[in-house]
Each structure stands twice: as C-alpha cells, then as structure tokens.
Length: 98
Image 1 (cartoon, rainbow, N blue to C red):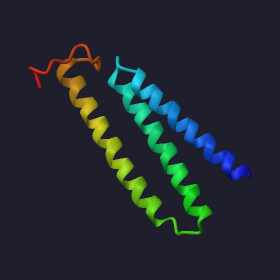
Image 2 (cartoon, rainbow, N blue to C red):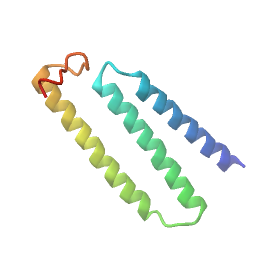
Image 3 (cartoon, rainbow, N blue to C red):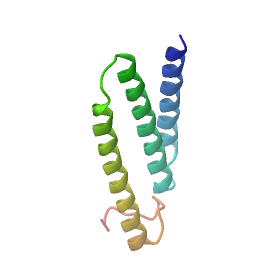
C-alpha cells in the first residue's frame, strides 16, 4: 500500500513540475530547471516501477543517459543565448535575430 502512495506522490510531483513549466515564461533557466525536475520524477517513477515488476534496471540507465544529454543540450543553448544576448529573458529574443 505504501508503494502506491509513493507512486501517487511522484505523479503529483510530476504534475507540479508541468504546472511550473507552463507558468514560468520569464527566464530560460527556470524552464530548464522545471524540465530537469520533471525528468527526475520520471526517472524515479520508472526506477520504482521496474523494481516493482522485478525487471532489471538497465533501461533506467539508458533513460538517465538520454536525460543527461538533454540537460547538456539545454545548458549549451542557455550559454550561447547569454553570450549573444546578454541575458536569458524570453522578452529580449526576437525571431528575426535567430
């Protein structure tokens, strides 16, 4: 019974991450942090579900590898935007400059 409560708690935390991702539109860094929080919740949920069904954890390692690549790509885009524009505000970006 406590495992199901833990699953519901992780799903609720994932939903809160989705709400934060939708509501933060000012900074790129805040949106990237909310995306990483959502990925972390998905990883924990996947890991516990694989343990519950007695599967091996190799798939979770593949998932974690792709998540790290996604995080590095987001940070590299953030650094390049800060170098070109000077800040990470979405209001300072223009589609004509990209």
